[in-house]
Length: 275
Ligand SMILES: [Zn+2]
Image (cartoon, rainbow, N blue to C red):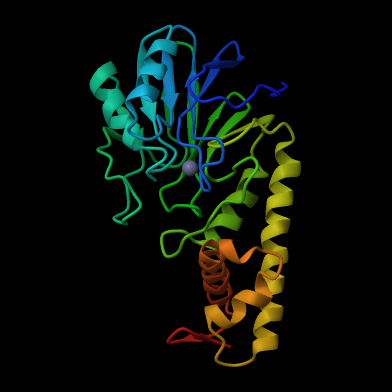
């Protein structure tokens, strides 16, 4: 399937007979062209990631829904994916299924009607969607598999790198979750931001490789800075290819890489000093 459609907020785009995408009007540095909301099914619908609590977007979802909405799924509970679920539930009557939100200041405290676990299946008359637990970007992140199309939320984005924001974000879990998807039969990735991705295994391997190469740069930075290295002192070496304007985000990813190296037993950490 090609996906050369323009990424225009608010305009429903049929990606195939059973999948329609509507982009929320929340474009930005962390959200790319905006959050992708997907409507899956024909005679009954499952909505994946209703997005932010935005009146025009919720109305666009309801207008595009040509059949009753039976389920509302969230890949995770960050503010650009989940708050719309509560409003859509009020207006459609459909229950919300997801993992429970962790208590962080960037998670929407979503009220979940059905708590999903890895392997759980959500069904309608014409669709069956399996939840796959993919922690890393968020501890409660689920990808959803329908036929061989995987709705990846923020586990895999198109056009930008996923931010791993510790402590709820976890680099070790993220790389493991990517590796686990290599064992799933996939044809197409439908990310939470950006276009469809038609080479799933190529993309998964590219993402794993990207993280491991960065991990290697972090190791080299630690070797260079020496004992008692801090996030601040490592940043210019580990992220010498990144603009200073992105250092705030890079520092989070660096922290996530350092946490992974400590968890892997490669590094020690005492009071924020690594070596
Ligand atoms: Zn997102």
